[in-house]
Amino acid sequence: MISPVLDRLASEDPIEAFKWLPTQFKGKLKLSTAFGKEGQVLIHMIATHSFPIEIFTIDTGRLFPETYELMDKTRMRYGVKINTYYPNTHQLQTLVTQKGSHSFYESVENRKECCFIRKVEPLTRALLDADVWITGLRASQSEHRQRQKMVEWNEQHQAIKYNPLIDWSKEQVDDYLKTHKVPYNKLHDQGFASIGCLPCTRAVEAGEDERAGRWWWEKGDKECGLHVRVPA
Image (cartoon, rainbow, N blue to C red; front, side, top):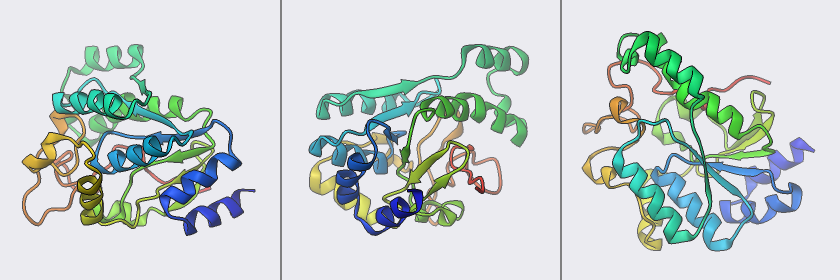
């Protein structure tokens, strides 16, 4: 069944895909959002059409106040339930006790360890019963994301991963937000193109790609591990 589903999703626009997916999967369609602009576009599509798609987010415990503000504003605006997943308490306590609160600045290995505990492990729990994992990834966000496909089988989570906005431009996203008056994070107006944890995010400079403000002290792919492709 997987191959026909992948082909169908790859040929549909998001609204049509969201209409069709519930006819194939009952109750196990999940949108992950960190409340970036792309996530807000998808939440608007889902909420205004009452599509039976679960919305969830991961609260790392170190998000910007503006992000929490947008979470609440989004819930109230659209009347949607947003399931929130948190890091494993024991793992997080052990990390901070052994290495302190800012070990991620000391090495790439430490940073990836922090991201795993605060993001990757909670995502694994969130997707345990998912048939389709929907994300707001866009190819133009970074070189790494240019290698992502619109739809593919995700071996790690044993689910179809669907990136309906992968071919959208930043301008298309901004136009959608403006046209539909969709709320977005205030930090975007201050030069923050991609918004994650407060200690690990800065505004981007002219000419930098959208992910340059994440873990800016490192070189290479600016990813936390949530969207690393694992070959089937």
